[in-house]
Length: 123
Image 1 (tube, rainbow, N blue to C red):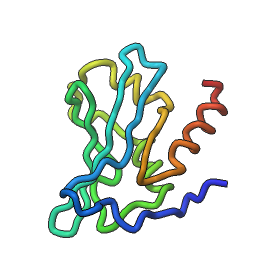
Image 2 (cartoon, rainbow, N blue to C red):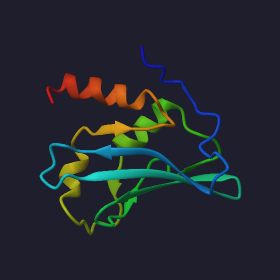
Image 3 (cartoon, rainbow, N blue to C red):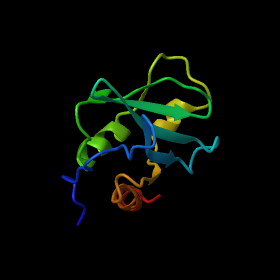
Image 4 (cartoon, one colour):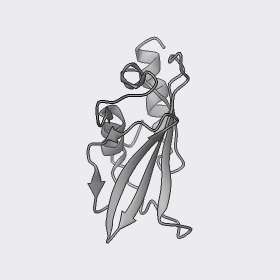
């Protein structure tokens, strides 16, 4: 049973102002898209940033938070990613409609959630 209420105590381990939260890969994409989600902090607020190989601009929901997100909130952030400025490189619009394979040291059950979701959709 996945604990959707799980919330890490912190994203940051003291080694720098940003932290990798998750890496997403979309194996069905002909482009082999990979997306990384980072958190950075400024004045006590955590900001989320999404980076891909092509330099696309992404909108996240939420875009910032005062504390780490629960697993459920983070899954929502992943599933509602959007291309931010309309100018897309690669085939990002189709990629974001897919179900990613996920890796995260911050959210250990994220991988399990997306494995189960991919099975449900026959991927």
